[in-house]
Amino acid sequence: MAQQTTLTIPNFSLRDTLLCGQCFRWEELPDGSFSGFAGSHFASVLQSGDQVFITSDADAAFWEAYFDCDTDYEAAKKRLSHYRAMRRPIERAGGIRLLRQDPWEALCSFIISQNNNIPRIKGIISRMCEAFGEAVPGGYTFPAAERLAACTLDDLAPLRAGFRGKYLLDAAQRVNDGRVVLDRIAASSTEEGEAELIQIFGVGVKVAQCVLLYGFHKLDAFPVDVWMKKVLALHFPNGFPKQAKKDRGIAQQFLFHDIRSFPDQQ
Image 1 (tube, rainbow, N blue to C red):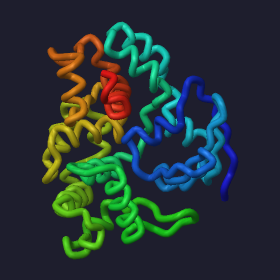
Image 2 (cartoon, one colour):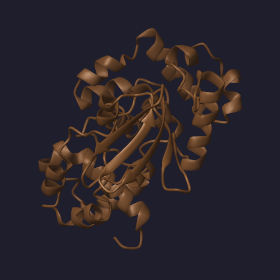
Image 3 (cartoon, rainbow, N blue to C red):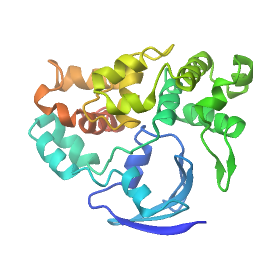
C-alpha cells in the first residue's frame, strides 16, 4: 500500500542526483517531480526546498538509505574544496548525492552503459524489466539474476542490447551459480571487489568501478571514462590526489556532472 514519506535533506538536488548518470529508472515529469523505481519500489518523488515528498510502498528508513542520508556531504565538500579544481563543480552541483542502489541492478545497468547513451540505456533497461521482471503497480521490477541466467541470447535479442547481451548473460550466470558473490564484494575492499567483478565477460575496470561506487557505495571507487579522462588531463594531470581517497567517489560525480554540463567552462 502506498504511503507518504517526507524527508528533510539540506543542500540536496533531487534533479541533479537523478539525472547525473548514476541511475536509469527515473523519469522527470512536467511538474518537476520524478517517477520511477528504487529497487523493487515504484515511487513518485517531489522536492520543495529541503523537503523531499515521496509516495511509495517503502518506509522512511528505505528512502533515508537510498538517498544516503547518513553520509556527511557537507564535510566531504569542505574537504574536497581544498582543491581549486573542485570548487566550481561543487558550487554548480553540490546537491548531488550518491544513491544506494541495488548491486545487481547496478551491475547490469553499467554493463549496458558501455559505448552507449542515457536514452538508449534507459530503453534497454525498460525492455528488460518488462520482458523478465515482475509486474507491480507502476511498472515492472528489475529481473533477478536467476531469471536472466535461464535465458539464451535469442531470448535477450528483443532488448536490442547488441554485444552487451552476452555480457549480461555471463553476469547473470556467474551471480546465479555463485562464481561471483555480491555479498562478498560488499564486504571486501574496493580492490578485491574489482578483481571479482572483472571476472565477468565484458566487465573491465571502468564498469567495475561504476558498479563499486553506485551499487556498493564504495566511496574510494573512481570510474574513469572519456569525460573523466578530460577532467584529469585538465585539472589533475598527476592523478586525483591520494590524500582525498575516501572522498574520491563523491568528487568523481561532481566532476563528471560538471564537465558534461559545462564542457566549455572548464
